[in-house]
Length: 103
Image 1 (cartoon, rainbow, N blue to C red):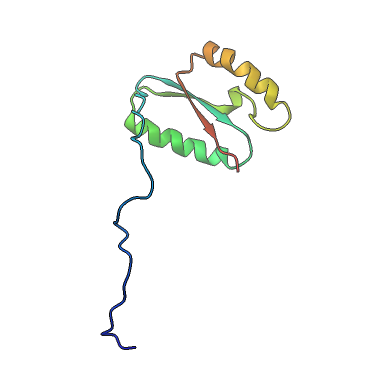
Image 2 (cartoon, rainbow, N blue to C red):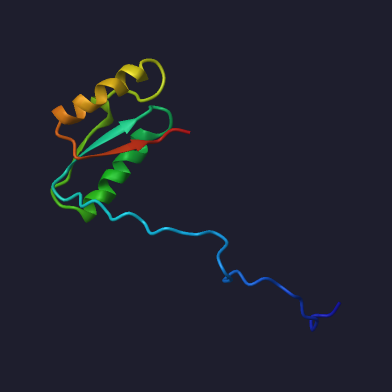
């Protein structure tokens, strides 16, 4: 073979084989209270502060209520934690939740 030979190839910009749907509208977090839920499995103590700082750049007067207020969503007494969650979210006036960060 020489460098001058041509090869047939597929173009990656061809027709999509997957039907896509539009993304949901973004929830305006300005002035909202965001609850942080964590399963205490993977690096939440590192990841959540980064998320909080990044989100705070885009929305004013946002308040984060830390994972330590909710209990672990995995292992041990997660059933009790999750059963109590709706009332706790209401009592703490939580507008939205970030939940993570398991394996």
